[in-house]
Amino acid sequence: MIKTFVLVISLWGYNGDTWVYTGNQMVLKEPMPKEQCETIAGNWQKFEMNKYFRFSIECIEDIRKET
Image (tube, rainbow, N blue to C red):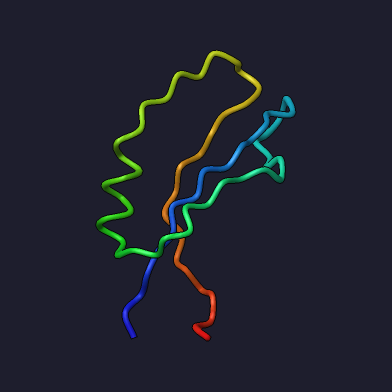
């Protein structure tokens, strides 16, 4: 079985001590090979103007069961 990955964009907040996941994320629903996902993730440019929030762009292994 070939591993596939999904692109996940999540929002994180700084609580003054550490970065914590806010519970908000967007997931590209198209599973793909890791290399393709990393290429897409690398095509984004960040402009972080608020020191208390940041976006994270990651390739996460798709663990959904096929039906």
